[in-house]
Length: 431
Length: 181
Image 1 (tube, helix red, strand yellow):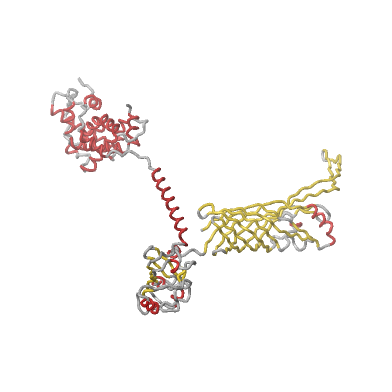
Image 2 (cartoon, chains in turn red, green):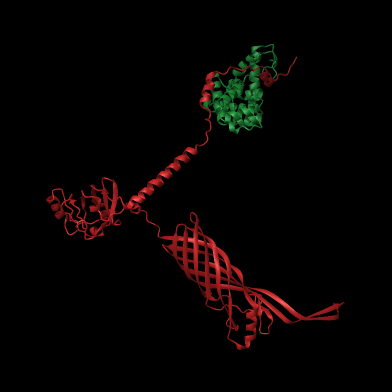
């Protein structure tokens, strides 16, 4: 009898479960992933806070003692000018106070000039007031050479007498012979200046880019040189009024310490509204039926017209500025010129017959009265800048701008001049 | 405790839960390892290595699937990797080594499990692996081909030859048994 044999099922049914040796688990146990521990934040936070507090107190005390702990009394002062001699960029000598283990720096331009490489010791048993004046100065008896000072030192048998408090003499122990310390000027002692260790060259030139936009207001000034156009001139003066518009631009600039130069491209819109009332308005309507004129209606009356006149300008501004900075804030005063290189216009003005006529660029060439560019302008602005993050600043910059030339063509009898008030609001990025 | 909560406890770092998981699945996995290994110590090594992988990658198990199947697959892959890398033995044997199939195979249902496993163990490694995968663990030819990185047709022929080999062995062992695999 043939019976189908299912080996898989047979194995499942009959497979014995062997005993697993304990050492397998012990080996596996050693490789179990360790329990995830929460990051210990609080202790680090406390330690960090403690360090900050201690650092603040220590720094505050150090600053407070800056003007009092110049050099302790009965201390040995070593003047070592070799460092400054080897490095001409550092016009100071290094003064070490062995007792306090503090370093001081003494400007010694004169010693540099004399190519002196002294290494000598100032030793004083005097009180601090004798060593230092109230202005924190060591006044060397500069008319004497070191040799004469040493002679005086020996004559006093290590007990120098300082009987002149106003001009104290600091005894000097010569460590290198034949060295003359000749200084006719008072030497000031300074606390260690971190800048002395900063050998990085500070960046003197910085580049930046500004992008901005803002509201603009351009009052118009009309002038008439043709008496025949006086009526239109008066009508235009009463019918057109300036409106708030907008401007935008982008500039790149370079900063030389406190002076900056900028240039870029700027769009400015001058907007006016023409409000005209045609009291002799007459409208004729012809009504046709089946191609035959059946009626003519004539409407007469007063018509009110409101048209917005847009004058779009593209210019290249160039400015120079002076920067005052404090903390995250900067104030930049700028003076510059703008070169208008393209303008286009849209709108309508009253013509010589007291009717409004459109002057839109490209659309009504026969009635175009404005130039496609009108040259120079000058501006003055004050930019207030606030640093918002690394390399990024936001700024607001009110400005006033005056256009030297009228924007209309010479053939047009009424001259139209502008000045502009605008406020730039934008972002600045420092490279 | 069900598998999901056991795994959750394991992931939270409970060694007790890990031990419980190990005790639950280790015996059956060891039995499987024995079938894929040439010796008991090697099977235990595979089991140990497999469970280390399991505990280190337990977060990869998705609770929607059966934990047993996932563990089984990990252990099996460990065994196969060991076979492929350490022993460097080809998973196939030449046709000349395949014994001829007897004309009248006999039934083996009356054989004890131990006898069958013993017969399987006498097979060459290549046959034994493919035979175990297909006939005992129920993997399809496609799956086996993917595991062993061989073609599906090769896999089929290997299984067929393994069957013939085993049938021949059984026939020789007991001529009264009809083998029909």
